[in-house]
Length: 431
Image (cartoon, rainbow, N blue to C red; front, side):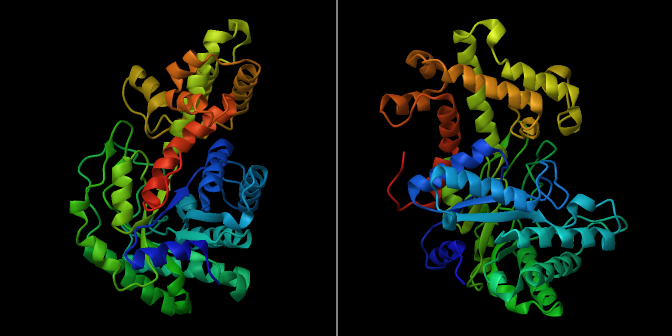
Protein backbone atom coordinates (compact mmCIF):
# COMPACT_ATOMS: atom_id res chain seq x y z
CA UNK A 1 0.00 0.00 0.00
CA UNK A 2 1.32 3.41 -0.95
CA UNK A 3 2.19 6.05 1.64
CA UNK A 4 2.38 9.81 0.96
CA UNK A 5 5.95 9.51 2.19
CA UNK A 6 6.87 7.22 -0.71
CA UNK A 7 6.74 10.06 -3.22
CA UNK A 8 9.40 11.93 -1.25
CA UNK A 9 11.69 8.90 -1.39
CA UNK A 10 11.02 8.28 -5.09
CA UNK A 11 11.83 11.88 -5.97
CA UNK A 12 15.05 11.80 -3.99
CA UNK A 13 16.14 8.55 -5.64
CA UNK A 14 15.37 10.08 -9.04
CA UNK A 15 17.73 12.94 -8.30
CA UNK A 16 14.98 15.49 -7.69
CA UNK A 17 15.28 17.33 -4.37
CA UNK A 18 12.06 16.94 -2.44
CA UNK A 19 11.41 16.82 1.28
CA UNK A 20 8.71 16.93 3.90
CA UNK A 21 8.45 18.93 7.10
CA UNK A 22 7.90 16.91 10.25
CA UNK A 23 6.02 19.10 12.74
CA UNK A 24 6.88 17.87 16.24
CA UNK A 25 4.49 19.77 18.49
CA UNK A 26 1.30 19.16 20.44
CA UNK A 27 0.28 22.82 20.62
CA UNK A 28 -3.07 23.31 18.85
CA UNK A 29 -2.08 26.64 17.30
CA UNK A 30 1.13 25.14 15.89
CA UNK A 31 -0.79 22.19 14.48
CA UNK A 32 -3.34 24.61 13.00
CA UNK A 33 -0.52 26.54 11.33
CA UNK A 34 0.86 23.33 9.82
CA UNK A 35 -2.58 22.23 8.61
CA UNK A 36 -3.30 25.60 6.99
CA UNK A 37 0.10 25.56 5.31
CA UNK A 38 -0.62 22.13 3.83
CA UNK A 39 -4.10 23.19 2.74
CA UNK A 40 -2.67 26.19 0.89
CA UNK A 41 0.21 24.37 -0.78
CA UNK A 42 -1.83 21.29 -1.70
CA UNK A 43 0.57 18.96 0.07
CA UNK A 44 0.45 16.67 3.07
CA UNK A 45 0.95 17.58 6.69
CA UNK A 46 3.16 15.33 8.81
CA UNK A 47 2.62 15.83 12.54
CA UNK A 48 4.62 13.80 15.04
CA UNK A 49 4.22 13.17 18.75
CA UNK A 50 7.28 12.32 20.82
CA UNK A 51 7.36 9.55 23.37
CA UNK A 52 7.60 11.99 26.28
CA UNK A 53 4.68 14.09 25.02
CA UNK A 54 2.27 11.26 24.29
CA UNK A 55 2.36 7.71 25.62
CA UNK A 56 0.04 4.96 26.84
CA UNK A 57 -0.21 6.73 30.21
CA UNK A 58 -0.76 10.23 28.84
CA UNK A 59 2.78 11.66 28.68
CA UNK A 60 3.39 15.23 29.79
CA UNK A 61 0.52 16.47 27.60
CA UNK A 62 -2.01 14.14 29.21
CA UNK A 63 -2.69 12.60 25.79
CA UNK A 64 -2.54 8.99 24.69
CA UNK A 65 -1.83 8.26 21.02
CA UNK A 66 -5.55 8.04 20.14
CA UNK A 67 -6.12 11.41 21.85
CA UNK A 68 -3.34 13.03 19.83
CA UNK A 69 -4.76 11.53 16.64
CA UNK A 70 -8.18 12.98 17.46
CA UNK A 71 -6.65 16.39 18.19
CA UNK A 72 -4.84 16.55 14.83
CA UNK A 73 -7.76 15.13 12.87
CA UNK A 74 -10.14 17.56 14.54
CA UNK A 75 -7.99 20.57 13.63
CA UNK A 76 -7.63 19.28 10.07
CA UNK A 77 -11.39 18.82 9.72
CA UNK A 78 -12.12 22.29 11.11
CA UNK A 79 -9.57 23.80 8.75
CA UNK A 80 -10.82 22.00 5.64
CA UNK A 81 -7.86 19.69 5.09
CA UNK A 82 -8.91 16.17 3.98
CA UNK A 83 -7.74 13.49 6.40
CA UNK A 84 -6.05 11.57 3.59
CA UNK A 85 -3.53 14.42 3.51
CA UNK A 86 -2.67 13.99 7.19
CA UNK A 87 0.21 11.71 8.22
CA UNK A 88 0.75 10.94 11.91
CA UNK A 89 4.17 10.02 13.24
CA UNK A 90 5.63 8.77 16.50
CA UNK A 91 9.05 10.13 17.37
CA UNK A 92 11.74 8.55 19.59
CA UNK A 93 9.55 5.55 20.40
CA UNK A 94 11.44 3.17 22.64
CA UNK A 95 12.36 2.62 26.29
CA UNK A 96 13.62 6.16 26.90
CA UNK A 97 10.82 7.11 29.29
CA UNK A 98 11.62 4.08 31.44
CA UNK A 99 15.42 4.11 31.45
CA UNK A 100 15.44 3.84 35.24
CA UNK A 101 13.96 0.33 34.93
CA UNK A 102 15.80 -2.88 34.03
CA UNK A 103 15.89 -3.52 30.28
CA UNK A 104 13.18 -6.22 30.24
CA UNK A 105 10.70 -4.03 32.11
CA UNK A 106 11.56 -0.94 30.08
CA UNK A 107 11.17 -2.83 26.81
CA UNK A 108 7.84 -4.27 27.91
CA UNK A 109 6.54 -0.74 28.41
CA UNK A 110 8.14 0.38 25.15
CA UNK A 111 6.31 -2.42 23.39
CA UNK A 112 3.01 -1.23 24.84
CA UNK A 113 3.91 2.30 23.70
CA UNK A 114 4.56 1.23 20.11
CA UNK A 115 1.42 -0.90 20.10
CA UNK A 116 -0.66 2.09 21.20
CA UNK A 117 0.76 4.27 18.44
CA UNK A 118 0.27 1.62 15.77
CA UNK A 119 -3.28 0.84 16.90
CA UNK A 120 -4.17 4.55 16.81
CA UNK A 121 -3.25 4.79 13.13
CA UNK A 122 0.20 6.35 13.26
CA UNK A 123 1.92 5.40 10.01
CA UNK A 124 5.43 6.83 10.49
CA UNK A 125 7.28 5.38 13.43
CA UNK A 126 10.78 6.36 14.52
CA UNK A 127 12.33 3.73 16.78
CA UNK A 128 14.87 5.04 19.26
CA UNK A 129 16.44 2.39 21.46
CA UNK A 130 19.76 4.17 21.83
CA UNK A 131 19.52 5.08 25.52
CA UNK A 132 20.71 2.53 28.10
CA UNK A 133 18.37 1.23 30.79
CA UNK A 134 19.24 0.30 34.39
CA UNK A 135 22.11 -2.19 34.38
CA UNK A 136 22.89 -1.78 30.70
CA UNK A 137 26.48 -1.27 29.55
CA UNK A 138 27.21 2.32 28.57
CA UNK A 139 27.18 3.06 25.72
CA UNK A 140 24.93 0.47 24.16
CA UNK A 141 26.31 -1.46 21.23
CA UNK A 142 24.76 -1.11 17.78
CA UNK A 143 23.80 -4.77 18.03
CA UNK A 144 21.72 -4.24 21.19
CA UNK A 145 20.09 -1.08 19.81
CA UNK A 146 19.16 -2.83 16.58
CA UNK A 147 17.86 -5.90 18.39
CA UNK A 148 15.53 -3.79 20.52
CA UNK A 149 14.32 -1.81 17.51
CA UNK A 150 13.51 -5.02 15.64
CA UNK A 151 11.58 -6.32 18.66
CA UNK A 152 9.46 -3.17 18.64
CA UNK A 153 8.82 -3.46 14.91
CA UNK A 154 7.58 -6.99 15.54
CA UNK A 155 5.15 -5.55 18.10
CA UNK A 156 3.87 -2.89 15.69
CA UNK A 157 3.39 -5.39 12.88
CA UNK A 158 1.57 -7.88 15.09
CA UNK A 159 -0.63 -5.19 16.61
CA UNK A 160 -2.26 -4.06 13.38
CA UNK A 161 -1.99 -7.10 11.12
CA UNK A 162 -0.54 -7.38 7.60
CA UNK A 163 -2.96 -5.11 5.74
CA UNK A 164 -2.67 -2.12 8.06
CA UNK A 165 1.01 -2.74 8.71
CA UNK A 166 1.68 -2.29 5.00
CA UNK A 167 0.92 1.43 5.47
CA UNK A 168 3.54 1.94 8.19
CA UNK A 169 6.91 3.47 7.30
CA UNK A 170 9.71 3.07 9.83
CA UNK A 171 12.69 5.24 10.73
CA UNK A 172 15.79 3.79 12.37
CA UNK A 173 19.06 5.26 13.60
CA UNK A 174 21.26 5.26 16.68
CA UNK A 175 22.99 8.61 16.23
CA UNK A 176 20.02 10.76 17.18
CA UNK A 177 20.24 14.25 18.65
CA UNK A 178 18.72 14.84 22.07
CA UNK A 179 14.95 15.35 21.66
CA UNK A 180 14.17 19.08 21.78
CA UNK A 181 17.74 20.29 21.35
CA UNK A 182 20.96 20.05 23.32
CA UNK A 183 20.85 20.41 27.11
CA UNK A 184 24.37 21.75 27.32
CA UNK A 185 26.32 24.49 25.60
CA UNK A 186 27.52 23.07 22.31
CA UNK A 187 31.14 22.71 21.38
CA UNK A 188 32.40 21.26 18.10
CA UNK A 189 29.75 19.19 16.36
CA UNK A 190 30.70 16.58 13.78
CA UNK A 191 28.48 14.60 11.45
CA UNK A 192 27.99 10.86 11.75
CA UNK A 193 30.82 8.99 10.09
CA UNK A 194 29.96 6.90 7.03
CA UNK A 195 31.34 3.84 8.83
CA UNK A 196 28.98 4.34 11.78
CA UNK A 197 26.00 4.78 9.45
CA UNK A 198 26.84 1.60 7.53
CA UNK A 199 27.22 -0.32 10.80
CA UNK A 200 23.77 0.87 11.86
CA UNK A 201 22.28 -0.42 8.61
CA UNK A 202 24.11 -3.74 8.84
CA UNK A 203 23.12 -4.43 12.45
CA UNK A 204 19.49 -3.52 11.86
CA UNK A 205 19.29 -5.72 8.78
CA UNK A 206 20.63 -8.65 10.81
CA UNK A 207 18.26 -7.98 13.70
CA UNK A 208 15.28 -7.78 11.36
CA UNK A 209 16.12 -11.24 10.04
CA UNK A 210 16.56 -12.66 13.53
CA UNK A 211 13.15 -11.39 14.63
CA UNK A 212 11.30 -12.47 11.50
CA UNK A 213 10.68 -8.98 10.12
CA UNK A 214 13.14 -8.98 7.22
CA UNK A 215 10.24 -8.31 4.87
CA UNK A 216 9.71 -4.94 6.55
CA UNK A 217 13.07 -3.59 5.34
CA UNK A 218 11.63 -1.93 2.17
CA UNK A 219 9.31 0.03 4.48
CA UNK A 220 12.22 1.52 6.44
CA UNK A 221 12.00 4.90 4.75
CA UNK A 222 14.65 6.84 6.63
CA UNK A 223 17.86 6.61 8.60
CA UNK A 224 18.58 9.18 11.29
CA UNK A 225 22.17 10.36 11.24
CA UNK A 226 23.73 13.53 12.54
CA UNK A 227 24.38 16.04 9.73
CA UNK A 228 26.00 18.34 12.34
CA UNK A 229 23.01 20.60 12.87
CA UNK A 230 21.90 21.48 16.37
CA UNK A 231 20.98 24.29 18.70
CA UNK A 232 21.44 25.08 22.37
CA UNK A 233 20.12 27.98 24.41
CA UNK A 234 21.89 30.78 22.55
CA UNK A 235 23.56 29.26 19.52
CA UNK A 236 22.63 27.46 16.31
CA UNK A 237 25.07 25.14 14.56
CA UNK A 238 24.33 25.65 10.88
CA UNK A 239 24.55 22.94 8.25
CA UNK A 240 27.86 22.79 6.37
CA UNK A 241 27.44 20.49 3.41
CA UNK A 242 31.16 20.12 2.84
CA UNK A 243 31.29 18.05 6.06
CA UNK A 244 28.79 15.43 4.83
CA UNK A 245 30.04 14.72 1.33
CA UNK A 246 31.02 11.11 2.03
CA UNK A 247 28.13 10.44 4.42
CA UNK A 248 25.59 11.35 1.73
CA UNK A 249 26.55 8.29 -0.33
CA UNK A 250 25.75 5.75 2.40
CA UNK A 251 22.17 5.24 1.19
CA UNK A 252 22.99 5.00 -2.52
CA UNK A 253 22.35 1.24 -2.40
CA UNK A 254 19.14 1.55 -0.35
CA UNK A 255 16.41 2.20 -2.93
CA UNK A 256 13.68 2.92 -0.38
CA UNK A 257 15.61 4.96 2.18
CA UNK A 258 16.50 8.63 2.69
CA UNK A 259 17.98 10.52 5.63
CA UNK A 260 15.94 12.12 8.40
CA UNK A 261 17.33 15.24 10.08
CA UNK A 262 16.44 16.04 13.67
CA UNK A 263 16.91 19.40 15.40
CA UNK A 264 16.71 21.44 12.21
CA UNK A 265 15.05 24.26 14.18
CA UNK A 266 16.47 27.74 13.47
CA UNK A 267 18.46 26.64 10.41
CA UNK A 268 18.55 29.29 7.70
CA UNK A 269 16.33 28.83 4.66
CA UNK A 270 19.47 28.23 2.59
CA UNK A 271 20.69 25.54 5.00
CA UNK A 272 17.31 23.78 4.92
CA UNK A 273 17.40 23.75 1.11
CA UNK A 274 20.92 22.32 1.16
CA UNK A 275 19.85 19.55 3.55
CA UNK A 276 17.04 18.52 1.21
CA UNK A 277 19.38 18.61 -1.79
CA UNK A 278 21.79 16.37 0.16
CA UNK A 279 19.09 13.72 0.81
CA UNK A 280 17.94 14.75 4.28
CA UNK A 281 14.39 14.54 3.01
CA UNK A 282 12.60 14.58 6.39
CA UNK A 283 13.19 17.83 8.30
CA UNK A 284 12.02 17.69 11.88
CA UNK A 285 11.12 20.92 13.68
CA UNK A 286 9.50 21.48 17.07
CA UNK A 287 10.87 24.07 19.50
CA UNK A 288 11.42 26.46 16.59
CA UNK A 289 7.66 26.53 16.03
CA UNK A 290 6.65 27.14 19.64
CA UNK A 291 9.45 29.72 19.82
CA UNK A 292 7.71 31.55 16.94
CA UNK A 293 4.36 31.16 18.68
CA UNK A 294 5.78 32.76 21.82
CA UNK A 295 7.12 35.63 19.73
CA UNK A 296 3.68 36.21 18.24
CA UNK A 297 1.71 35.96 21.48
CA UNK A 298 4.12 38.21 23.37
CA UNK A 299 4.00 40.69 20.48
CA UNK A 300 0.21 40.69 20.77
CA UNK A 301 0.57 41.23 24.52
CA UNK A 302 2.71 44.31 23.79
CA UNK A 303 -0.03 45.58 21.47
CA UNK A 304 -2.57 44.87 24.20
CA UNK A 305 -0.55 46.99 26.63
CA UNK A 306 -1.00 49.95 24.29
CA UNK A 307 -4.74 49.51 23.79
CA UNK A 308 -6.30 47.95 26.89
CA UNK A 309 -6.62 49.48 30.39
CA UNK A 310 -4.17 47.95 32.86
CA UNK A 311 -6.81 46.27 35.00
CA UNK A 312 -8.24 44.43 31.99
CA UNK A 313 -5.02 43.19 30.38
CA UNK A 314 -4.08 39.54 30.14
CA UNK A 315 -0.54 40.14 31.41
CA UNK A 316 0.42 37.00 29.50
CA UNK A 317 4.24 37.38 29.73
CA UNK A 318 4.02 38.07 33.46
CA UNK A 319 1.72 35.10 34.05
CA UNK A 320 4.08 32.82 32.12
CA UNK A 321 7.03 34.01 34.21
CA UNK A 322 5.13 33.50 37.46
CA UNK A 323 4.08 29.98 36.56
CA UNK A 324 7.58 29.00 35.39
CA UNK A 325 9.01 30.24 38.68
CA UNK A 326 6.33 28.46 40.68
CA UNK A 327 6.85 25.17 38.80
CA UNK A 328 10.52 25.15 37.79
CA UNK A 329 10.96 21.43 37.10
CA UNK A 330 10.84 21.79 33.30
CA UNK A 331 13.56 24.44 33.03
CA UNK A 332 15.79 24.70 36.11
CA UNK A 333 18.08 21.80 35.18
CA UNK A 334 18.46 23.18 31.66
CA UNK A 335 19.20 26.87 32.22
CA UNK A 336 22.42 27.47 34.16
CA UNK A 337 23.86 30.84 35.10
CA UNK A 338 22.84 33.81 37.18
CA UNK A 339 19.27 34.76 38.03
CA UNK A 340 19.35 37.36 35.25
CA UNK A 341 20.63 34.82 32.70
CA UNK A 342 17.97 32.34 33.74
CA UNK A 343 15.26 34.98 33.40
CA UNK A 344 16.32 35.69 29.82
CA UNK A 345 16.54 31.99 29.04
CA UNK A 346 13.05 31.29 30.36
CA UNK A 347 11.64 33.70 27.80
CA UNK A 348 14.06 33.70 24.89
CA UNK A 349 16.15 30.50 24.85
CA UNK A 350 16.29 28.59 21.58
CA UNK A 351 15.67 25.50 23.70
CA UNK A 352 12.24 26.98 24.44
CA UNK A 353 11.53 25.16 27.68
CA UNK A 354 8.60 27.58 27.90
CA UNK A 355 6.75 25.28 25.49
CA UNK A 356 6.05 22.85 28.32
CA UNK A 357 4.02 25.49 30.15
CA UNK A 358 1.41 26.45 27.55
CA UNK A 359 -1.10 23.84 28.87
CA UNK A 360 -0.92 25.37 32.39
CA UNK A 361 -4.50 26.48 33.28
CA UNK A 362 -3.43 29.98 34.39
CA UNK A 363 -1.40 30.50 31.22
CA UNK A 364 -4.22 29.13 29.06
CA UNK A 365 -6.61 31.57 30.73
CA UNK A 366 -4.25 34.50 30.14
CA UNK A 367 -3.81 33.53 26.48
CA UNK A 368 -7.59 33.30 26.04
CA UNK A 369 -8.04 36.72 27.63
CA UNK A 370 -5.39 38.23 25.38
CA UNK A 371 -7.07 36.92 22.24
CA UNK A 372 -10.50 37.98 23.52
CA UNK A 373 -9.33 41.50 24.38
CA UNK A 374 -7.76 42.10 20.97
CA UNK A 375 -10.56 40.45 19.02
CA UNK A 376 -12.89 43.09 20.41
CA UNK A 377 -10.67 45.89 19.04
CA UNK A 378 -9.39 47.10 15.70
CA UNK A 379 -5.62 46.88 15.94
CA UNK A 380 -4.15 50.09 14.49
CA UNK A 381 -1.98 49.25 11.50
CA UNK A 382 1.03 51.28 12.66
CA UNK A 383 0.97 49.34 15.92
CA UNK A 384 0.79 46.04 14.05
CA UNK A 385 3.72 47.15 11.90
CA UNK A 386 5.79 47.84 14.99
CA UNK A 387 5.32 44.37 16.50
CA UNK A 388 4.49 41.91 13.69
CA UNK A 389 5.86 43.48 10.50
CA UNK A 390 5.47 40.45 8.22
CA UNK A 391 1.85 40.02 9.25
CA UNK A 392 1.33 43.78 8.80
CA UNK A 393 2.52 43.45 5.20
CA UNK A 394 0.05 40.64 4.52
CA UNK A 395 -2.79 42.57 6.12
CA UNK A 396 -1.95 45.55 3.91
CA UNK A 397 -2.03 43.31 0.83
CA UNK A 398 -5.39 41.89 1.84
CA UNK A 399 -3.98 38.38 2.34
CA UNK A 400 -4.53 38.16 6.10
CA UNK A 401 -7.17 39.38 8.52
CA UNK A 402 -5.92 41.46 11.44
CA UNK A 403 -7.51 39.06 13.94
CA UNK A 404 -5.18 38.15 16.80
CA UNK A 405 -5.46 34.37 16.42
CA UNK A 406 -4.89 34.60 12.68
CA UNK A 407 -1.87 36.83 13.23
CA UNK A 408 -0.30 34.39 15.69
CA UNK A 409 -0.88 31.37 13.47
CA UNK A 410 0.50 33.21 10.45
CA UNK A 411 3.68 34.07 12.33
CA UNK A 412 4.24 30.36 12.98
CA UNK A 413 3.57 29.72 9.30
CA UNK A 414 6.47 32.03 8.45
CA UNK A 415 8.75 29.29 9.81
CA UNK A 416 6.87 26.61 7.89
CA UNK A 417 7.08 28.63 4.68
CA UNK A 418 10.87 28.37 4.79
CA UNK A 419 10.58 24.60 5.24
CA UNK A 420 8.13 24.34 2.35
CA UNK A 421 10.38 26.33 0.03
CA UNK A 422 13.30 24.08 0.96
CA UNK A 423 11.25 20.89 0.55
CA UNK A 424 9.67 21.83 -2.79
CA UNK A 425 12.23 24.01 -4.59
CA UNK A 426 10.59 23.54 -7.98
CA UNK A 427 7.05 24.47 -6.95
CA UNK A 428 5.49 27.88 -7.37
CA UNK A 429 6.15 29.84 -4.19
CA UNK A 430 3.28 30.42 -1.79
CA UNK A 431 3.25 33.54 0.34
